[in-house]
Picture 1 (cartoon, rainbow, N blue to C red):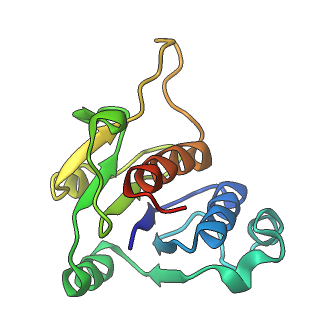
Picture 2: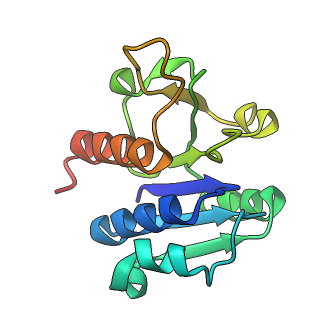
Picture 3: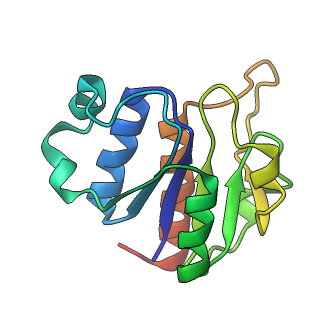
Length: 152
């Protein structure tokens, strides 16, 4: 089963939108703290609408706690970064992959990128545009993995 991991997300509506996507696709959502907001934040709840009961949400206080959970379940860690080595379009996804995304302002920590099995990027044609919105990036990566794995 594919999993989405948000490491230190900062903007509640982004996380709420991602939670809604995860609910719609029955994809586990892992949040790694510290977060830039409280889980009770009204903007987070509003962006997720009334779909929160359908989100398979896991909260990890820090990276060490997340790594312990990952060790139990295995699977490849795929870090999405603007400096990723491979395009997500050229990658072959597996059903037990963990798709990792960093905060809106900092991306994934270098220490975590070093532990990833691979780092992926989403090609951007306009060089003046540094990155895409976090919720857009998650959706792009998740749906390409689902398309390849024929999860409909």
